[in-house]
Length: 128
Image (cartoon, rainbow, N blue to C red; front, side, top):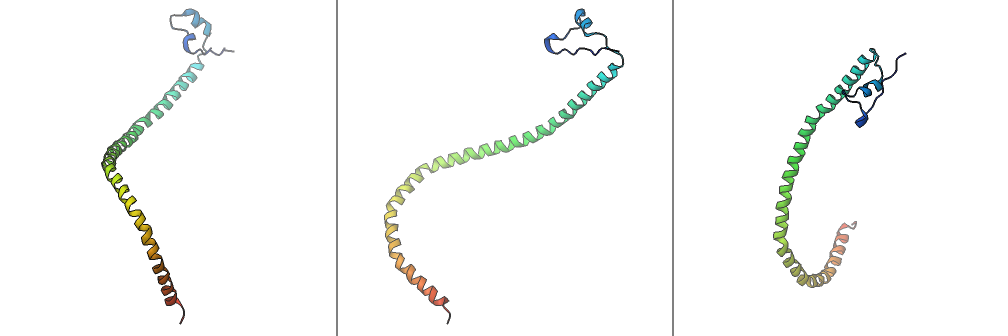
């Protein structure tokens, strides 16, 4: 019966010049070589399949980047417009503060007219 070869990763892996490392691995059965090659080919096929996705991903990311760039320019323009409006907003707030007391008076004056209008509408809708 053949021994399974020892799998060593990283720094512990024997180099080609290290004969003691090669001896330590033991003999490799010739029938396992096709299985090992098949496994390596399967790994390469999976890597290739995953690599095929990268160009599609690049196209998608380029499209996203173009949209972000256009939105970034738009946001800069909007911020500049808002900053330009800053003085106008302050001026408008001052104007509203002066008008607000008068709006309250107008509301009190209009209230009786609303009641009259409500009675007129109810009278028109009443059955005859």
